[in-house]
Length: 345
Image (tube, rainbow, N blue to C red; front, top):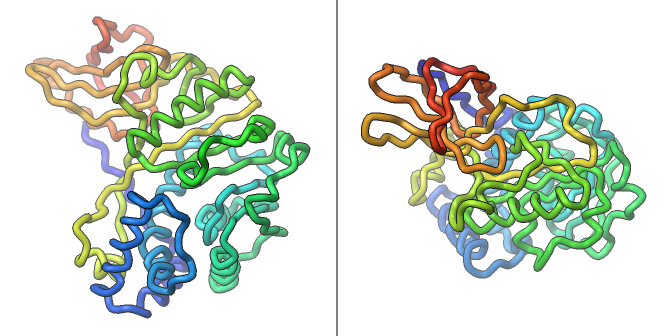
């Protein structure tokens, strides 16, 4: 059974505002700034240079929309169990121009918000966009990184501490983070970043946290236990606006799909038992006589598999949750499908 992919796109109010920034430069010139900024991220590991108008515009018109869509997908994944409904306030470390904030507001999550960002120019950009988008927001505060959240604030069970593409700017995760009640990480889908999240997950389970997403279990991560190179990441399909495509035409990469890694930890245990639910963490792989797809439901490295002679033609999108039949056949590391299974994507 073929399932139509969900296509993520920017809200019109955000797209229209970012298009105004894009028109400050011709698409080809802006693409050069985007490539320069990408090189900074990949090689120099510096903070975004908000002082440079070209690089700032490159971030707002390229990296912000892509990160917005990734964050949107993470919210969707987490909300499968309504895990954000009880959140009353959030504390973002390395908030940049407010990408995550806009995502929450445009999805009707209006939290009391506290932002920790080292760049005054990024903070100014955040405030400017907030006004331009005409978004009604609960009280917000902005601080520098040196003023970390106080423990008694992030310990509340309705508080969320957020790290969105900011771990790469830290030498190590600060010790105070373990005081938080809820923690959400959103990071690039690189092998290094993703495996770091798996290591953080294993460490924080020992500190009394529960892994609520993408994990369906509380056992050690099989990506770490059984492999030195595997990493857990997600993928979504996207449709970007025409003005974005005009810029992208001058870039070597086309963003028909986006990948990312994420981890949601909480000191509140999962609301529902997921004994027969697994997360699909791999793409389909055609092998002789069968197709396999990596899943995660515990501390073992396992795959769904379907034999071609059984004429099962189910497509399961990476990142989906699947309901496993209680009588599914386990053969070595494979769970043999005899019929289509229920997906929650």
